[in-house]
Length: 184
Image (cartoon, rainbow, N blue to C red; front, side):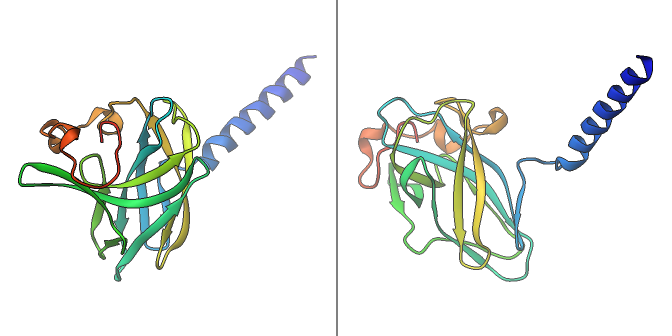
């Protein structure tokens, strides 16, 4: 009986050790060619919302530029690259029809109030605590699967960080063109 218990303990310990050795040190890090994608996240959306934002950081460790040209997700009819900017006191949002270039040796951060993924025609709400699979498409790195961690409705960044642009953002009724998104 004692030998059986020792064997079961050894097997359980080996399985646990194998799990930790197989788990990457940074589970949120995705590598694709020369690109490293980290901090992929989104905000929860209220029921009935038709759009949601996606945010992440892309680092190009290579010697040539790459371009994020699009994406797809099962939760949305389409995923586009968008940019929010402030011009003459008015917040505007526009799609980036030619994509977003990531220069060699540079890091591009998609965050509230700036560049972001726009998930359009959501098939259901994004719920806090969920993980949303998204496929990004790059000119050179190709299709890359990432998972967006869904945070609370008003989240500014993973870990509680915030954006100064968001804190100074005007009322949404002043958006001139683009797509509506709650608290973008």
